[in-house]
Amino acid sequence: MYNVLIIDDEPWSREVVKALVEWDKLELSLNGEAEDGTEGLRLIEERKPHIVVTDMRMPGLDGVGLLKQMNEKVPEMKIIVMSGYDDFVYLKQAIRSRAVEYLLKPIDQEELNAALAQCVQDLKRAEQAGNAGWRTPVAFADPGTRERYSALRERVRGYLLELDKPAAIEALSKLGEMFGNDMENNDDRNVISKVVHEFLSLLEEFAAENEWDITSLRSKAPTGDWTSAVKAIEQLQAMFAEAIEQIEALRRKRLKLDIAEIQAHIDLYYREPISLETVAHRFFVSKEHLSRAFKSQLGENLSDYILRKRMEKAKELIVEGELAIKHVAKLTGYEDVAYFYRVFKKHFGQTPGELRKED
Image (cartoon, rainbow, N blue to C red):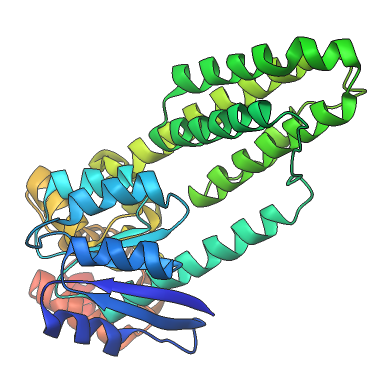
């Protein structure tokens, strides 16, 4: 079971979330509730839930502050953000904090459970990555070396979360300086291997948390007889740099809605069972945020745009006169022919048959 903590200053809102969650189906259990960010952070540190569902506007420590602290203290924890406001600042902070979803109130049950299901999937994937053979503890005889290594590893983890490529590369250089010559002089290939494997494990976790397929990067992992620590570190640097670049691009895409890309997607798939919900899911945004952005840029609701594309194509096919009306309906996204007739008449003021007779 995976534990969920709910943070919201409004008791009724917490009750709604609890009522909407499909606890048993998703293998979830309630870990606790908090009415503000300060109490929430205390419970997070005390109970260590797997998933946190939090509101953004709260007295005291608000959602923005809470997410920043969570990013520093518990970066592995999954986050779902709720807000009654379609606020770009909140959305941006949610993305920076690797939130799985940004849900607008009133909360939609299907969206909430889909987000929780994604959290569970990510957690399971991270567990599998941790058991995949790249996680090997590194042991050093010298306590000072152990401490420096642990501190450096955590710095690299932090730079990954911040997508700070220059800092991550520089930190890995320090890793080479710290161990490189000593390893090579002592021919300690086992230590080199363990260090590399531990950092690869760190990269695996980072990829899993960001839903990024690391398969293509695995082939670039350092391998061989481990006689050169310097070469191994250079290969690690290249892998970390590419991972940060790829995930930075992925986050930018999720944060910034490219309405032209969404419009092209609809133009291509309007014949399919496409809707506001399916498009929102495809582009990693809430349907409310997508709807507002689409209307703001194009002056037309997304659902109306889909309808117009379907009706224009349907009219074109009917006027051509080569296909039966039922086939026209299917080719424009309607399995129910009777429903297609009703939509067509409402849109054009006449039935498909009447239009065909005119022509």
